[in-house]
Length: 137
Image 1: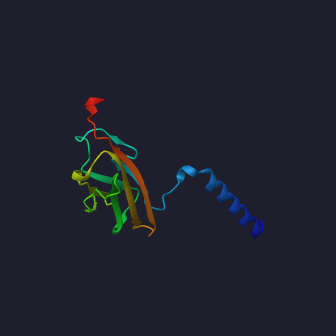
Image 2: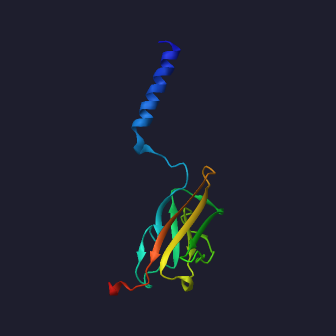
Image 3: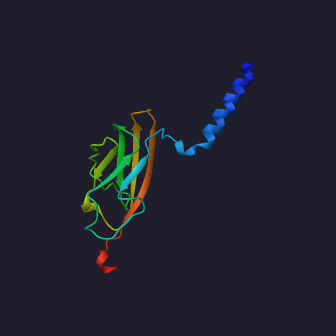
């Protein structure tokens, strides 16, 4: 077999293997795997309103170059600007100033810098607080 045939075969082989095994995907950047509160969650009572927002990622991140902010219905920041990296080193948390919480939609904005590959990922999601007790529904 000539060298060019071997190379052609190898290219075709790796292409077929690479495109036929999508379940073997590997994350190249930190992406969220869990949220608290959850995206699109509707919180019905002040008793269940969380004290903090927490997002867990697929990989470790550089805390000094990462951020987590919670914006309320009046476009006002309602977190305490006290970002914490949790024990797992893959989770960020920020506490909420409950005195600023009113019924409405809240936006959580996050940005993290991967320790593994140096890439930045960012995103956002919403949850809402309706201010009514779940007992009245």
